[in-house]
Amino acid sequence: MRAPAAIAEALPPAHRALFRAEYEDALDAAHDLARFKQVQTLLRQWRLRAIAYARPGYEEAVQDALQQRTEMFARYTPWVSCAAATSAVTRSRQGGG
Image (cartoon, rainbow, N blue to C red; front, side, top):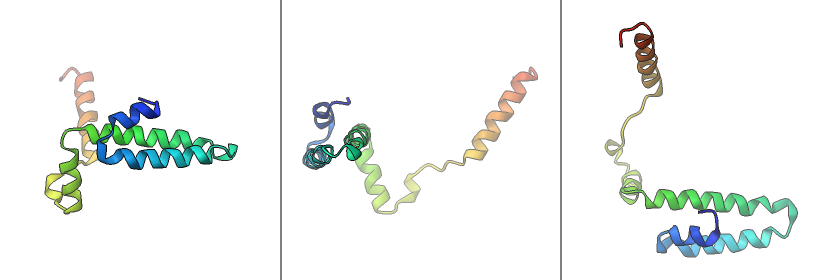
C-alpha cells in the first residue's frame, strides 16, 4: 500500500480529501529537488494513518483521548515488563521453567 491510489482507497472517505490536497502540495514541492523527500515522507505518514484508521476501536480510542477518559487506557510500565521477562529467562536457564 505505497501507491497513492492504494493509500487513498484504504482511507476512510472523510480523510481522502485532505490526503489528496496534501499529496498534491507535496508533488508541487517535489519539483525542487531539495524537497523531493517530502513526497515519500507524506506517503509514509498517510499509509500509517490508513492502517491506524482501519483498526477496530480507533475512533472510540480517539474520542476517549479527546474526552480525557484515561481509565479506558491500559497502563504499561516497561521496566516491570522487562523485569518479568528477565526473571522468566533466568528461571528457564536454571531449569526452573
